[in-house]
Length: 127
Image: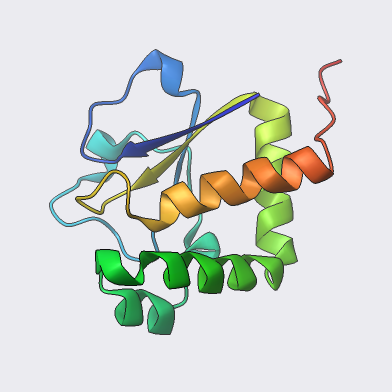
């Protein structure tokens, strides 16, 4: 099972697997056809207050990651739904619109899911 993180503005590729937009807001200038999404999971994105507080300020990223992880801990339904998608599809690409490929919530989400999966491994339903 693989979790990929990718900008939504990058062209879709067959290796992306199941494509999930994990932003609360629709990306500017992106048509639904060009996005080539399988799912838009607004409810897994950081809360509006946290997103605004962070403002993509690199000096706030560590604290942002801690706060977002706490939100994810409290959002078991959305996390569980995403884990089910990963189990079902094997390869999932988390799509985001931010310009920075290293300092964004999708990276935190991927790492969170990998940590959760290490503690409580996913069962492959196709086995």
